[in-house]
Image (cartoon, rainbow, N blue to C red; front, side):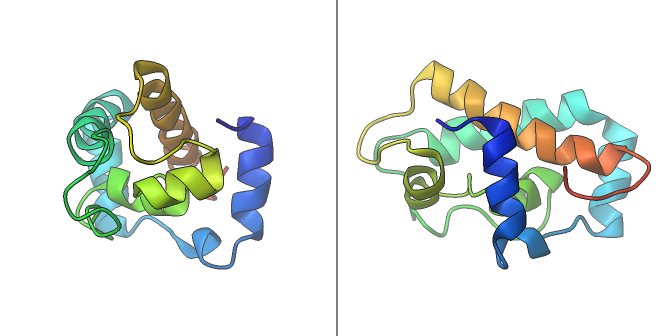
Length: 123
């Protein structure tokens, strides 16, 4: 797992990762439901789609749109086990530990928090 400050510097340097932005529909959902509920929903997505040792459809299990957490997962490279290994040093082939799930949620929270600020820029 990486230091979040260093991670977000690297994410900003990635042409692919840095292009993700919340659409107005997702921004409205985040503002209407609140960060806490969105992160509760994100936890369920992570536990069911990312945490298993061999997730179903790994590499394709996270949609690109439809929920603010999905966009955040792609923006932060927490969308599949391959990205978790490459970007976060979390090995594939074993279930995620509770600490790793909590780490993924902290990463998502930091990215999503940028969307609740006035500048609407990625943190």
